[in-house]
Amino acid sequence: MDQPESGGPGISTRAIHGAGHRNDARAGIPVSPPIVQSSTFSFDAPEEMIDVFEGRRDGYVYSRYDNPTIHHVEQKLASLEKGDFALLFSSGLAAIHAVLWGTLKSGDRLLAAQDLYGGTVDLMARILPRLGVNFESADLVDDAALDAALERSPAVVYFETPTNPLVRLIDGPRTVARARAAGARVVIDNTFATPVLQNPIDWGADIIIHSATKYLGGHSDVVLGVAVGHAKDRDWMEKCRRSFGGSPDPFAAWLLNRGLATLAVRIQAQCTTAGILARGLIRRSGVRDVYYPGLEGDPAHEIASRQMRGFGGMLAIDLDGGREGALEFMRRLRLFRLATSLGGVESLVSHPVTSSHRMLSAKERGILGIGEGLVRLSIGLEDAEDLIEDINRALPVKRTPCS
Image (cartoon, rainbow, N blue to C red):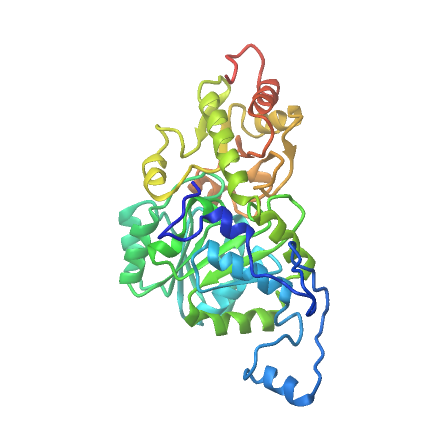
């Protein structure tokens, strides 16, 4: 999972080691980069400031534009995702907003996968159309649906893989190739997989987005987003961030940098535990279905096996009893915390119908396969045996144990 590529350092090494930082001319470089919590930066002479403003000299002017702490973390993220650059944003949705605003204009068509985070769908389906953008969603897992949608010449194709919350897999290389052949730019949300498990830049994607709040930060203590791309997109993306005001806070960037240091080992442990739980749950009465690409019988298994370097730490289960069955299950859990978000060191449980996808109508959720009894599990770093015991306690009694 953490193998060097092309003779270069592996992903854990890149996640830990950034450029050295010096506070002054004295010997010694801080192992942990300093938090530069300054909103503005001064100059020794007007000419120096003018050169920086006009781009003739590198420098920092104002932290809404750029900041040393933020820049350090951005360089690390670009390396992890194999991009030419990365930009941090104040949230994942701020990154999505800036990217879509910068790549779309009035009259353009945006094609998105049906399976997306509810907040992303809300932006695409209810806000962008007010600005003249034509929005269409399609089941991009299906070849015929993808080809039919591409015939309508979208300017941008946007998808997540694995998807939220059913952990479905879109064939990344195939979808990117077809979209690019149709003249579309491709934006991929890589939050669920992280650069540990896949690098969509390798497939030919234009821009990669993360909610860095999730696995990249990994400790449920920071809200950030990131967009990674090719050099040709840097100028307009920086201008969008600057103009929309979605710049991150230096302390949040510092927390993200600390989380990145353990990203690979966290993901590896979460993948292992998620697989153990998923295999146990498919034998459990009261569980109608288990969605996890690591299961050989899962529809996503074949694609995940060839395009990912592991199966992830997210799974979903469909429980008997509909909404009340799901809510009662969550009431009985003790270790799994009832909370939105995902990807942290603590295991979380959520009910998509009443949380992440509550903005969608019942009909929209039905099309996606998000039922009233669906529960999403984000697996943390607790011992697998303790999580199994917690699930067995929460599910109806007199059943075959989870394992």
